[in-house]
Image (tube, rainbow, N blue to C red; front, side, top):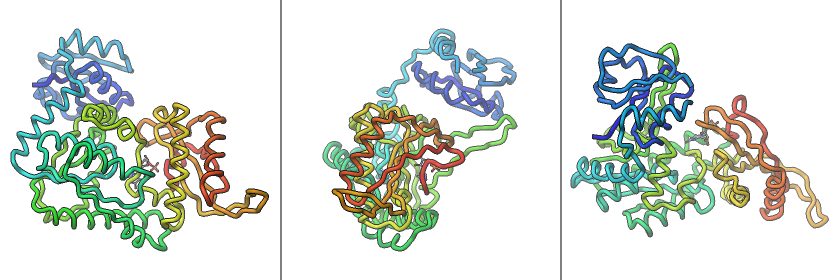
Length: 406
Ligand code: XMP
């Protein structure tokens, strides 16, 4: 049985940091709201209990107990390793090994369906399951045509060529673009894309036969209930990709990453053999470039934006800033501006570059990127991308702005 330290959450801002610190010490940790009561906590047979920002009575327990009132790294590490006397053997490779064993037992000789979104979580989920059950897994990748440059290729290459997994790659670019024709309202775009995505996914799933399990890239922050000091649940993220599936598709859910934080998912991904390029990509919204092209989405505007975005990201990487920044991207504005090129007047698109730092995307601050890097990004985009003649840098924080422009 794996060793466990429970973090009892009283709504303190540092609860997640404590949980992560325990895990970095090599011990698996779980966050439990204090409202769960002591009996429920003790029933998990933890080796240690950490009260974060509050305290409840601990009648009698074999677990060691610690109270923390701020992010006390050394104390936490000492508690996990010395006071609780843990073996500290929770590592990305032990996680992969244990999870592969568990998936084999749970799935047996049944079949699993996994939708690849192009993102890191679904990719690592699929790779883990593939390592456990090979061809009993079928991956479906719906390529909306709204992804970043080379993104679809990166996913297809990893699964088809490197892992030799069974991959259904659906090129649905035309269907998505024609469904979006003439649409300018952001929420309307999201609705159209969400509904069409499910329809395409469902068609492909039906063609691929009968499945017993549906794999999902749910991760720990998705399911964790964080509680306010008043004891009320304040943030439970809905499983939007399950919520949309038709009720007559009777699957059992397989969510092998549900205990992991994002950085642990990345480490497990590297352990499974993914490239750093794929694993460390910045987050990308489900509706993709459609919410970064303000106004109507067309193939031409997608290509212009993809090109500009690629240059910006390439320059951030060259400057060694890409991994420091939480999310960076370009968006194409629905305004034309006057410029001059080769002594001739131009009247072309304005593009915005946005780079932010954040912990959880709930709040964000614009990144203080050195002027020289911004200058290179601007020069390259304006000179190399046809139909862009102006670049602006977004210096808005969230709130009151949001990270995306739509
Ligand atoms: P906002 O713009 O709300 O973005 O500050 C917060 C984070 O969520 C991403 N985002 C989305 N992700 N579907 C998604 O899957 C969406 O419709 C969507 N809108 C925004 C955004 O990229 C940022 O990381």
